[in-house]
Amino acid sequence: MSDSLWRFSIFVGITALMLILQWLAPKRQPRISTRKRWQANIGILLVDIVALRLVAPAGLAAVALAADEWQWGLFNNVTLPAWSVWLLGLIALDIGLYWQHRLFHRIPLLWRMHRVHHADKDFDVSTGVRFHPLEIVLSLGWKAVMVLALGVPASVILVFEILLNACSMFNHANYALPARLEALVRKLLITQELHRIHHSSKITETNSNYGFSVSWWDHLFASFTATAEKGSDGVDIGLTNINREQDHASLWGLLTMPFRQFPQGSVASPQAGERSQPTQSSKG
Ligand SMILES: [Zn+2]
Ligand SMILES: [Zn+2]
Image 1 (cartoon, rainbow, N blue to C red):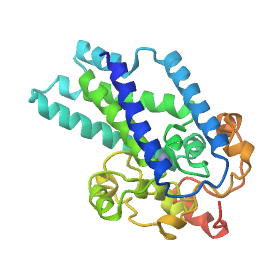
Image 2 (image 1 turned 90 degrees about the vertical axis):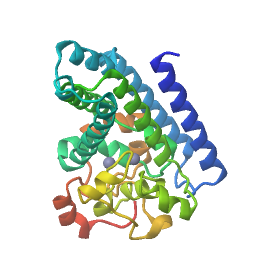
Image 3 (image 1 turned 90 degrees about the horizontal axis):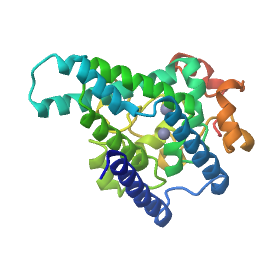
């Protein structure tokens, strides 16, 4: 089976499982039309797929192969057992993505793109694929820089991308693991409960739980929030300043969102967030 077929099959498998779970036992009832949201979220996924094909048809594996051929990057210039290259490579890439996510919240220009993900008024599997194509392309560029700097093998990239996709589908499901299981799983992974806090309209909660996969980096870099102020059922999902359906639940609204002005409200950086918080309404 080819690499991309593996990726696609695992993506479809995890997504199907999460769709079944959120259909059988939804954590929250939708606030707006699921049909409209899904049209927008799946629409932007399709635009992302086309954008990636146009910008980088050969993908990150080609960058890893080039790094290998040119003997670029840390792991191409030190002698380490293969298993440790794998382990350190996965850890380094994941920490790199944690910081990428944090910068997308911190830098206003990047937040313009990333707010597309956060403006979703509900939270389900489709939110996990809702990213602006500019963010997808910038993220690919950042991953390419990491691959060249680290010199990680193409096989590590493949596994990393599969794990990342699987985790994103897992932690965006409108589902909650049984409480005792969740308490265990969150020691290792960002669960739905933890990531739902990241989608809160409360800025100090939005600017926390940045991890995509393991929950360790949020502990390590002091951005972990264990419980939402309003509890897991009460979190207001979305951004308080983007409220019209044509803005947050249409493909055109999502594609144009980075280029538009919205009233002050849910802004990115913690300092700005703390300043603007008193003026923020509590409802999304
Ligand atoms: Zn975010
Ligand atoms: Zn998310």
